[in-house]
Image (cartoon, rainbow, N blue to C red; front, side, top):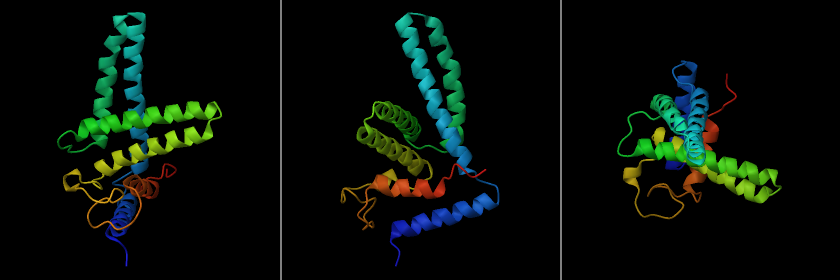
Length: 177
């Protein structure tokens, strides 16, 4: 018999497949959009640091335009945010992008194991972003349970990140045109 989480995962994949056939949902486009948002956050950071290092306020003036575009695009990904889910989502994407960048730098230095560790953490944060925004993670139900369990009914010995990563891998396929 399938565990509760496995049943939820299968239900999600079935729902995704039926929506995809009806052309109402395009998670591959949403994934592309999330990467664009990551890059816009990075542009905001670079404008800030460049303005600070060069002491040129004209760089600060550009931040508003980039931020406005990022905000509009995030509204397509983060629907009906409660509490601080909007900010959490933004920071999850930003941290995921930065860890991916650090991993890439480590890889170019020949430090494959360190790079792999950064890439894994980056994907974990990215999976948590999707888990929150696809309502797979309900923060209101989080209680002190086994460190690797998602909820009190979860008996599978796999970390939350491992479980969410599995969902993201199955539900989001960037190669679907």
